[in-house]
Amino acid sequence: MADHNDQNLTPSDLLLAETQSWNQLYFFIEHVTLKCALQLGIPNAITKHGKPMTLSKLMSSLSISPSKYPYFHRLTRILVRYGLLILQKHEDNNVDDGDDSKGYYSLAPTDRYIMKDGPWNSMEDQDSFFFKAWNCLGDWFRNEDPSKFYTAYGDLFWTKLSRDTSSGNWFHANMARDSRSFMNVLIGNEFKDVFKGLTSLVDVGGGTGTVAMAITKKFPDMKCIVLDLPPIVANLQGSENLEFVAGDMFQKIPAANAVLLKSILHDWNDEEFVKILKNCKDAITRSGKVIIIDMVMENPELDDEAFQAQLFIDMLMMVFLGSKERNKKEWEKLFFDAGFTSYKIILTLGLRSVIELYP
Ligand SMILES: C[S@@+](CC[C@H](N)C(=O)[O-])C[C@H]1O[C@@H](n2cnc3c(N)ncnc32)[C@H](O)[C@@H]1O
Ligand SMILES: O=c1cc(-c2ccc(O)cc2)oc2c(O)c(O)ccc12
Image (cartoon, rainbow, N blue to C red; front, side):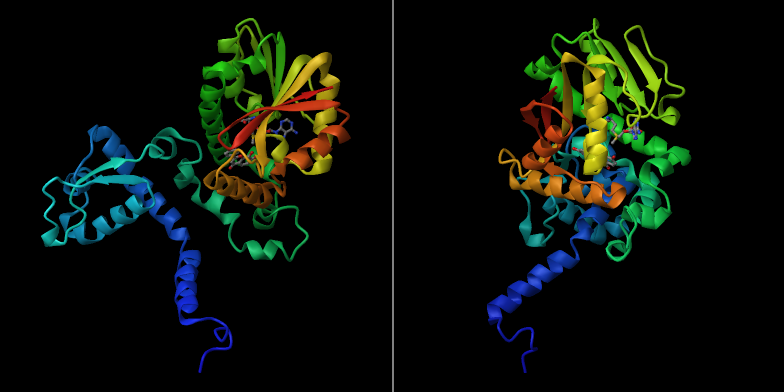
C-alpha cells in the first residue's frame, strides 16, 4: 500500500524525490568536508608543494597513515565533486585496478580565495561563536528576539563583539580580508573614478581601516577619516592623511566631501538605515556624495551561483543581525525616505554593487 504522501507520485517521481531529499538533508556535508580539508591543511600542503601532488604524497605531507588511504581518497573524491580540488588523471591511469583516485591533485582557482587568505575561512577558531547562532533557527521564528544571535547569546551582535575580544578580533580580521580583496578589484582598475576628485572622505563603520588605507595609498592627497566604535579604533594609529575617530554613526558623522558605507547598511533595519543616511546627508557638502558598497538582490547581472551566495548572506544578516539584503526597489525607497534626490548604481563587482547617492 503506497504511503498517502506517495499516492500522487509516479515511481520515477518517487525515486527523484528520494535523491532530492538526500541532497537536501545532507547538503551540510559540503561544509563539513570543506572544514575537514581546512583542518587537515590540504590546501596549504598542496600550495606548499608548489605543484599538483599524488594522494600518497599528500597523505604523507599531512602525516596521515597509509592505512587511511581507503577513506582519505573518498574525502578527496567529494572535494573534487564540490570543485574544491582538481584531479588530473595519470596518462597511463590503469583503470583496471579500480582506483579512480590515481592522478595529481591541485587546488581549484576558487580555493586560493577560500582556503589560503580569503575572508571568512578562519571559522575553525570561532566554531562555537559562529555556528552556535545557526543552531535551532526555528526557535527564533517562535520568539520575539531581534535576531537568532540574540536568542543564542542574549546579546546583540555588535555588543557581543565589543565584549568578546577574540570574536571581535576574528570578525574584524575577516572584514579586513574581505575589504582587501574587494578594494584590490575596485581600485586596481578603472573603477577608481568613484574616488576621483575627492579631497576628503569618511569611511563610516570603516573597522580597522583596510579600505581607508587602500584609498589613501592610491589617492595620497585625500584626507580620510575612519569612524567606528571606540573599542574598534581605540588603539589604531593613523597617518598623515588617515585619522581614526571613535564615534557612533547614529549620533554624528564628521564632515567631508563624501561618505563611504561598505557592508554597513545591510546590517540595519529600514528605520536605522534611514537614520544613518540622514546623518550622512548632514555630513557631506552639497556637491558631495555617499558611496555605498553593498549587495543589490535580484540583480539581473548576476548568475544563479551569485544569487545563491547572496541568499546565503541574506540569511546571515537575518540570523546575526535581524537585518537584510535589499533589492533595487527597496534601496531606492529608503534613499528617498532619507531625503536624497538621486542615485546611480555605478557598477557591480561580484556579489556587490557600488552605488553613488546625491543629496
Ligand atoms: C560589517 S562591518 C563592515 C566593516 C567595513 N566597512 C568593511 O566593509 O570591511 C560593520 C562595521 O560597522 C561598525 N559599527 C557598528 N555599529 C556602529 C556605530 N553605531 N557607529 C559606527 N560604527 C559602527 C562595526 O564596528 C563594524 O566595523
Ligand atoms: O559574516 C559576514 C559576512 C559579510 C559579507 C561577506 C561577503 C560579502 O560579499 C558581503 C558581506 O558581511 C557581514 C556583515 O556585514 C556583518 O555585519 C556581520 C557578518 C558578516
